[in-house]
Amino acid sequence: MSRYPEINLTKVTLTSIANRQSKVQFEALAKPVDAGATFARWWDSLPQFLAVEDLKAVATGIATARQADKPVIVMMGAHVIKVGLSPVLIDLMQQGFITALAMNGAGIIHDTELALFGATSEDVTANIADGSFGMVKETGAFINGAIKAGAKAGLGLGEVLGKELVEKQAPHLEVSLLGQAYLLGIPVTVHVALGTDIIHQQPSADGAAIGETSLRDFCILAQHVTNLGGGGVLLNLGSAVILPEVFLKALTVARNLGHPVRNFITANFDMIQHYRPRVNVVNRPTLAGGSGYTITGHHEIMIPLLAMGIKIA
Image (cartoon, rainbow, N blue to C red; front, side, top):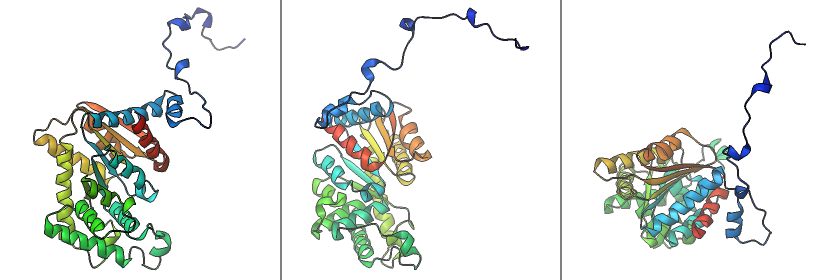
């Protein structure tokens, strides 16, 4: 017999499972489907837990928002374009599910190169060794030239690039977010941090024009944010710093001017969850009403899933 005292388990009080609240129910389990099943059947077969429920809530929220004529704003990092998702987002724009796009400076580079040349994303590791990284003249000349023209015409950075791509009849215009949004009359706002993009290191860069057109885009985004309240949706797809910070300021301006931007949905989609998207997109904006969701996974998988979920919601 042990020399140490032991608790007496014979005296514990037992209860019936019939009286216990259980988080997992039989009806919520996943249901196997055949290889030929429709997407809707597969979607309904998923287990009713955690990220599945969050993803479905975001998809339903977007469909509901558009039925109520509320905005759906998609903010995005450039990686979304680099992994081939522009056609998916363009399809959602064409079907009326996206009412505004916001991207960083890298996004316009990859979008423009795909539209004009059908290729983008150089090997940084190889090209930085000899100083050739980001020195492609055609990219800088086209984008910086368009930005200068936009500043003179009083246009935003995203609008003037879309306009130039359309007027130039870019060979691959069908995969350009900028070009297709311009044709659809959907605002694309571009939020630039000077010095972060390859076009800034070229002699064609005009800091004053970049700043003027990007600031105009901030004002356009802020105006769109004023209508988010009461059922709108804001998504952040892969921007870790720039766009979460821009959104927080745009939301502040909207509320400062008396717009009751409350009770809307936000969601952050990324492979790794970062501090700023969590606090500036998911948490802080919805404290006064609304819901914030965090969806973790590879963009090239999660965004097409979301797109299909929206269509059948």
